[in-house]
Length: 281
Image 1 (spheres, rainbow, N blue to C red):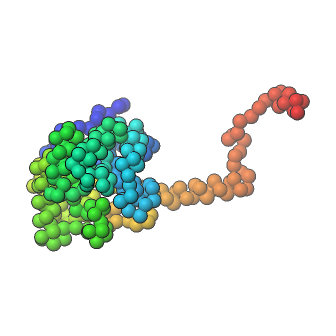
Image 2: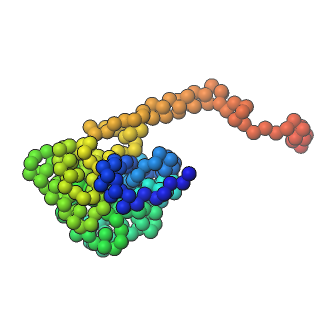
Image 3: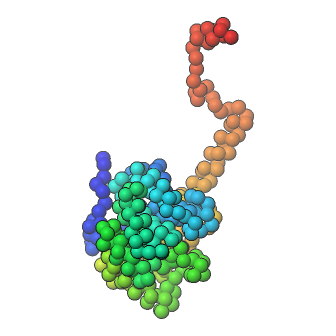
């Protein structure tokens, strides 16, 4: 049975009724179909694809073209989740006009319903402008991978009172700018709880504790198919890397010893046609 498209009012209602929101990243059509079947509320085509799909050492090299390409693919499979395109590095840094244009590409070309961008008060004016153009925006504060050099790497944020206060102020600035939701990444659970309680919009956590209105994980981390490193906040619900490698090794072995393809994997010509063919040779 087809699911109804998840809407912004539905997500807000979930917060108000204290029902948890489920969010995952996704990067291609087959996984998009699985998102649909699993009934996921929100799907983020994250610039994390740069690392977990494209093999970059961080998210900075990811381009708008790559993001649009993958968002299109996911949109064909994940039809009912709220689909969010992640604005890559430099897609919203040059000017407000550029930011609106690139956000619009996610909607018009990529099939997304909304966009996400990193930063707090410093990008509030950009969030406001994009929202005024008619495009819903999710904010993202805490550990923001596009700023990892300034942050000193992939490290937790908001661990002092002063740093936590900045995050709380950033969340308020994003909400005031019109963001429909905010993603908190790698911050103390207590700080995540304070922000969630103060905000009137849904707060999603990825490494921000159980008190957030919803949770996000990187799909490839959850499935155990990205092994370069595992953040503290990741729970692996499967170990597909082992399953995949074992399947590939079994295939390799069967090809080498002549077990595959077996007769049931091949097409056959009738004995009569084969006789005619041989007579023609």
